[in-house]
Structures are given as structure tokens and as C-alpha cells.
Image (cartoon, rainbow, N blue to C red; front, top):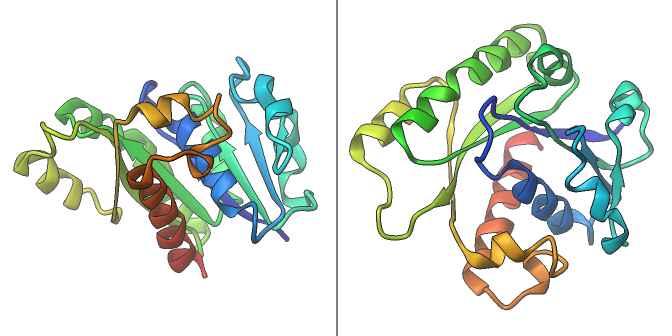
Length: 200
């Protein structure tokens, strides 16, 4: 049975799709990986032909996700999928919640975390983590926001993903691991390794 990693945040613009794509690509050499683009706009699904090493599947494959013939399935969820997130979390092994470092961005993840905690009450094996994404190199993270993140009851991952041009271009360049941005490569591989440690 495939391991399932679901990326979720009920607020748009936090970089879920870019993170989902690059995470899937980071596992492709070790595992048979599929990425489900659950957004009906299909921003990732429409470029599936550009990525031969992973399967990019349409939202209808969520229906039989537990039976898919892969080692790992990564699910990119849109902000509006809230009515189905609870069921999706129930079948997941890990829920990754990307957030920007702004106060209102962090406050907005509370609804998603409530669904995660509800799923964890039913599925004791479900793990979850918050990752700071699209961080501005100079503005960084205020102590107020950091303290707020630590008090949400869901682990804050050590890896931080910064706002880099290489991420914005990664869907056109074959992914971060194919590029020359060493810092971005280190961030994505570090995130992948941290998730593996948490779910293994």
C-alpha cells in the first residue's frame, strides 16, 4: 500500500503546488511516485507531459487512492477542498501544512489543523507538520509568529523553504533538483528527509 503525503492549507497562495511537485521529484529515484493534482484548475496536471519520471494524476484518482500501484502518492489540495479534506486526511500517512511567515497566514492554518487533529483522533498513525514556505530572506520570522507556530500543537519542521526564483521557475525547468540553485536543492532534500524520518 502506498504511503500518502497530503499538502493542505485552506488559504491560497502559500506555494503548495510548487512544493508538492518538487517533493514528488525528490523521491523519484528511490520510489515509484505519483502526484495527484486535486485542484480542478489542474495547474500541475496540465504540465504532466513535462515530467516523465513521475505520474501526475487527475483529481478523480482520489476515489481509489488507497489502491493506487505506487510506493508514494503526494496529494496537492486546493484551498476550496475543505469538505473532502477530512476523508483525505483519514487515509494519509502525513499531512504537510505549508505557510508563509506572516501573522495572518499562520492564523489561517488553524482551520486546517483542526481537521488534522480530528483525523488523528481516528487514525493514530497520522503524522503532520508545518513547514515555513516562501520565506523572505531579509524579513525572516518574527518572534511573535515563531511563538504562535510553536503553540499550535502541530510540529514545526526544522526545514525552511525560502522565496527563490528557482522555485517559481521549477515547473518549467524540470524541478529544483535539475537546477543549479544549491540552496534550494538543500531545502527540498532536507524537507523530504525530515518527512521520511517522521513517517518511517
